[in-house]
Image (cartoon, rainbow, N blue to C red; front, side, top):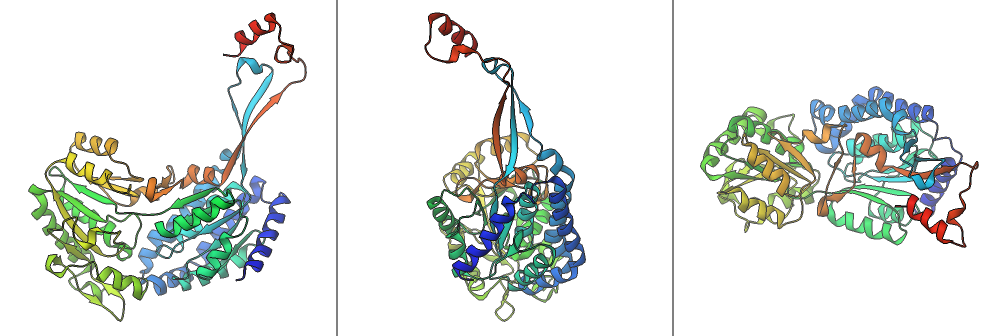
Length: 459
């Protein structure tokens, strides 16, 4: 789509927003109900699209995308009336006979740029938050997940007029054209490199942004951990969606004394969850495209593979792979893996690895498996990361009661639940001053008596 066409769509959305039709709470709830109803009516089509793009099974597609979107919509339906209310705040003595309050208002027309790895979840979750906040929205899905982009366009066009919500498909040209337009807010999920470009273009127009990026998310396993359960949950978190998850454990930092036991359990869990021949498992997905497939294959050092390592070029599949005796000099540790390859490193003391993790870009997630409360507290307090879990992986992003987002190089801003509503909302701070009395002391000329009163009331 050319820039002129995009600007025409945006102009219609801005006009629709200015009409005030998105503001009433009933209108917001109606939009959310339409989205929820569409998720249920077209669930089969959505599952099939996820299967085509990423090889996701019906169960995985529902658990990791469709169900999470439904949950966010329901959460917003339950809480939007409360979130959208203006609320009073304390008024200082100097402003006596006044009412101070904060009024949440939507930004206006927002742009949601979603990635290919969870093409449904990461387009519609922020959309639910944006609609609850009272905005209009343009969704730009990834060109690398074309089947999901097609079904998104079809569904959205059926339930919303284009001046309210619309989907704009395409690749880099469309991305560039969108970023040249005067949106009121930009919500981007994707790689750090593209995130920098989004922020750079937004800064030219002073458009506020939320960036949900990624990074090398560590998984720490100490000697007090329940090793079998840790392995089970790490394998789930790492290899679901073939490792193409921004909060997947990127690598394991394991205490030396339990490394061999952990590695053995990882191998057992891979076979239990994916079978002895994962590439023949119909529920095991695929790498999104050939370029990404070849990049991930290039990170595997066959000399250090102790499990997996097989791949199928035709289907773009890589078996769940574990690499042992890995160091920071290995190629696999030089970038975010974003694939089904799990390096295992060892450590002797916690201070050593927290210093190492903090010396790098802050990760989007961190996981620690431990029964030692002091170790858990040390990691929580000393390591900078976006969010994470204790004795599990991934599940923190499925909790609407708290925000999800990164810090530093892994992103800025957060969403889900109340934090999602707040992300797409500007809070107007307002003082309603009564007209009964107008204290003269703030006006010139300032007498000594007035100065005393000012010092008495303003402190």
